[in-house]
Image (cartoon, rainbow, N blue to C red; front, side):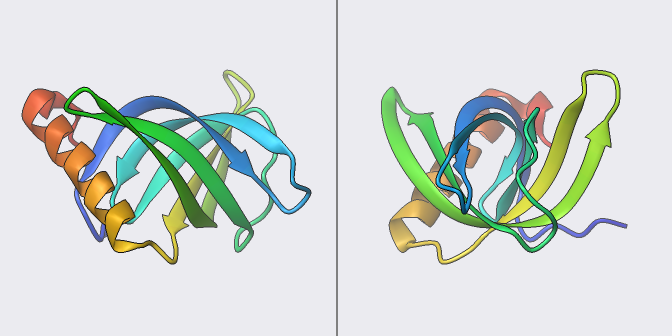
Length: 118
């Protein structure tokens, strides 16, 4: 049984991850909550416990907001169909403004796209 810390919505947001090597890796955020995300990429990001930084832009009421989210990998699975790698990440060290932006985006998605609730 999965227990979530906050409401989660399905998304398809293009983003990037920066890992220890400093390289920027493209990915898709497939689920998003105020506490973490599920991401999909074709490049290995590291094992469970690896720290990464997600760079993402979300649109809240026609305003685009850039977020840099410190994250830690909590889960991993390989998807054979598309050779995609799926990671579950937990956001760490969030600032109040980042939390507010994430919650605002998620609330907007819940209102505008109720079928995207996970």
